[in-house]
Image (tube, rainbow, N blue to C red; front, side, top):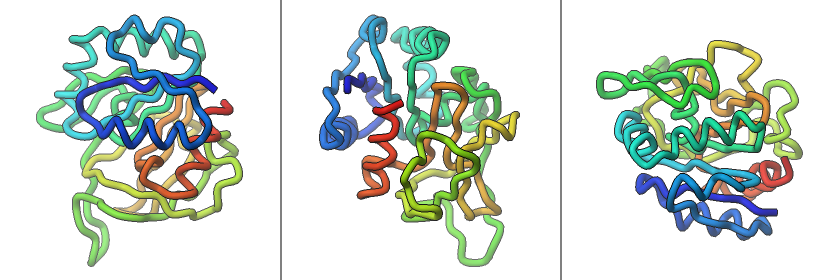
Length: 203
């Protein structure tokens, strides 16, 4: 199983590479946009601010390369900020256009109940909706590790593959064709995270 991970400069690349290798993948790190030309599967990791990340992707040519990868219906997984970048736009820091691969917008989380804290940090449930291949053989309500203050609101409810009951409930996995996004960090989510990555590698 071959997979290409984009070096964005805004993620813990080593953790993602190790997690994928532990799932049996042969991992290549993309240093330039051309490295995606023959990529069978791509992982877009990320932490930080939406506008800065999109500016880097556009500057380095990765934005167009990712759009072409998705157009060819090759598997793509965005993780944490990488999931948010799949959207049409994000409102963080005044707003910015996203990759436009999963129609929708990224907006700020809002506390809905006493005891909730922002940023949302730590373990929480991920509850599948529908039959996304990304969640195959993962436990319903299984815990995954989150660190985020914004969340993805898809335009089409059919693109929602899982939700998490925090801050009134938010979308924690999106799936549109061969394009997937996980708001949590599967590489930090123990056995459940490893199962999800293995599912992506089999997509």
